[in-house]
Length: 309
Image 1 (spheres, one colour):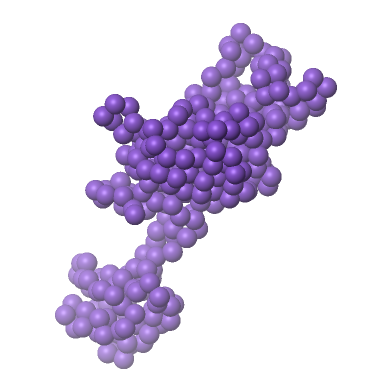
Image 2: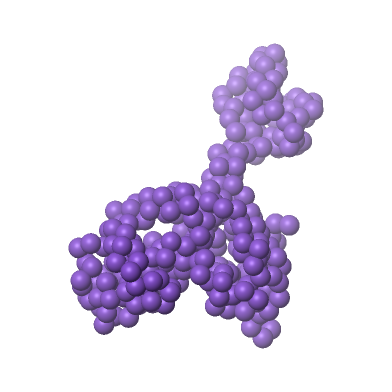
C-alpha cells in the first residue's frame, strides 16, 4: 500500500533523512521509533506531501506523491506534532471547519463529526473552547480531526503526547480499533508505546534506517546463557564441540554466553547442552535464552556506531 524508496531530505549540508526505504501493507500498525531529532517527523511530513523530498520516491496505492499529491492527501488522516488547533474555536467548530477542508459533503458532516467525537471520548468537551482545554483534550481533538473523513491511512506524530495514563490506554484501544480498516503509522520516542501498540517497528537513527522488524520477533534471541560449576576452559571446549554453537564466551565466573547459528533449533540445542553438562558430572545452575525486548534492541542500536543494512 505504501512504498518509500531511498527517501532523502537535506537542508544545505545537513542531511535530516538519509536514503530511507520501507514498505507498509494494509492494516499494519507501524511505529517510527527514534530519539528526538532522529528524522521521524521529517519522514512523516514527506509522506503526507507537506514537505518535498530532496531525493527518493513515495508511492501510495499506486499513486506517486510527486504527481498525485492531492489524491494521496485525501486518503490520509494526519495528526502533526504538537497538534496545531485554532484556540478561539470550540471542538465542534474546529471539526466542522476540518470537515470543510477535507471536502466532506454538508449532509454527511453531522454524522461523521458525532462519530469522531464519540471515538475520541470528547462528548463532555464538544462545546468548549479549545483554548480552555488541557493539552490531552487538544490532542484528542487533533485525532478526531484526523479520523473525521475515514482515511485509508492514519499518520500520527506523537499521538499520546500530553495524555494521562487513562487517556493513553484509551488512545491505544482506539488505534487498535482503527487498524481493522486503516493503515496506522505512529511516530514516537517512547519505547513502551511501540511495544504496546505496534505490530512492527522501524527505528530511525541519525536520519537513517537502523532496523525494520516485527515487534514480536525482536524478543527472539539466539544467545543462550549458562551457569555451571565447570572450569572455564573445559566448559568452553564442551560448548564449542556442538555444531549449532557459533561461539562461546566466559562472561564472568561460572557464567557463559553461547551464540547459536541462525538455523539452530534453540530448544533442542539447549536440551543437548544440558545433557552434555550432566554427562560431565558438572552442576548446572541455570540455562536460559537471553531476555530481549524493544528496550534492549534500541539500546544496542543507540550504542553502536553504524546502522543496519
